[in-house]
Amino acid sequence: MNIDPTQPWGVAIDYAGRATVTENGHTIAVRVYDNGLGYTLERDPFTGQYPSVHISAEFAKAGTGDTTLRGYGLAVVEAKDGVPAVPDPTAVQRAVAAALADFETRRAHYAALCAAWDPAAQQPVPEPEPLP
Image 1: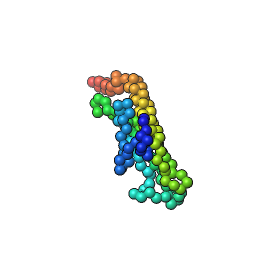
Image 2: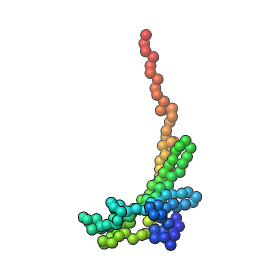
Image 3: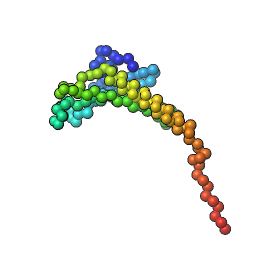
Image 4: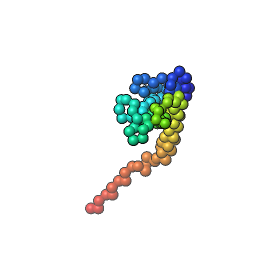
């Protein structure tokens, strides 16, 4: 993934922390958010730290028959030393790489499952005829 050096998170995000990344002709949804409970950025009263920032990425590919295979990735930027988390341009890149790796893992597992599945073995066994 190419990082945009003009953007703090390496990709242009909208007011709600959403972005779209196009990688090798595929579209990946990205979301940047903190784990705070309110609308304002406040320190945790117990730890004294600001909330961490989570960067999630989702890659989905639709197939035939209403099938969709997805891959998910997550990167976390921790706040340290009582100051808010600083934007990390590589965090989105790490989340996207994790989503693509998760997608490939799921694809391989589904392919193995489909190869091992025997539809004939799934057929119900007929009930025996009752004796007269």
